[in-house]
Image (spheres, helix red, strand yellow):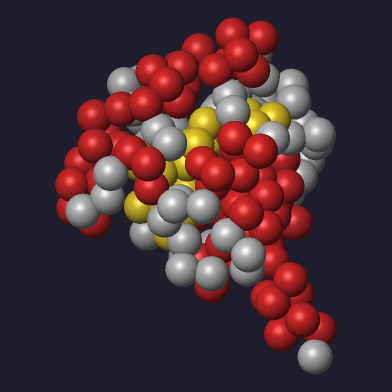
Length: 174
Ligand SMILES: [Mg+2]
């Protein structure tokens, strides 16, 4: 935990996986089409707080994910990248454009597709229901599962580590 706090301090970019992180990993099909996915409203609020704190949020999905593209638009996430089974090159392009190094990047993922990128970033985050191999890579693990508050919890943790959480709450409250 203490190590994760130190790793969270320099973070300027939070990158999120979609399925199993922003969603509960389920997709409901009722005929043709991309299906229905569920996104947490509290996670969305967390994304807005993160952006307000000066930490950009990006989304990289292995699938095309039209649902996540729409949700990202609602949340003002400019860096949405869908359909990338190899996520690391996508992240490296984003980092180059923004002059960021790996120590300034946090990534939250839940499955094997996220292993390579999580091994490189400064702060690797995972929801508690991530695959066992991913939990072993993560420096920090949420108590809440993916799609059910894991992202909000991760953002709270980063804002806390950066000494921003209390001030933001006071400003919000008053
Ligand atoms: Mg996933």
